[in-house]
Length: 125
Image (cartoon, rainbow, N blue to C red; front, side):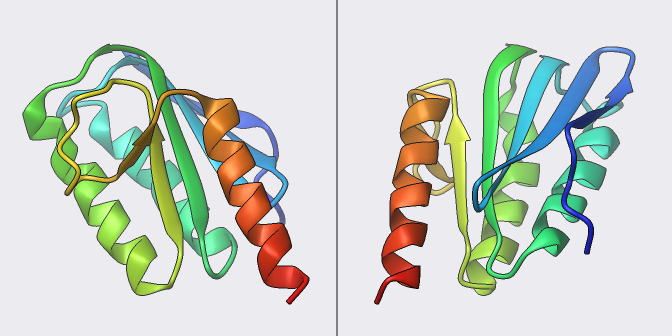
């Protein structure tokens, strides 16, 4: 499968940029996540999950202007699918998200470092 190059998908109100960083697919969100913009994110999550096995996906949310509790179902479903494939799903951004939704890290750098270190450990065993 072709690696997800740096490109973006957008809808008025939400932009999702996807890029490959080492073994991780990073989705950067900007704008407002809502019922009308959720399909854009859903498409990108599907692509990211299908890219590699196990999937290691980081969603960077600091560019979101609004995130409601009802929007978290999409992340919870993605987390379940990724964990079922022995992958990792990390959200970067707003603190205070329920732990059941996902692992949350304060910065993209920390999330990348953690997954890259984990990947290097797996390949050198």
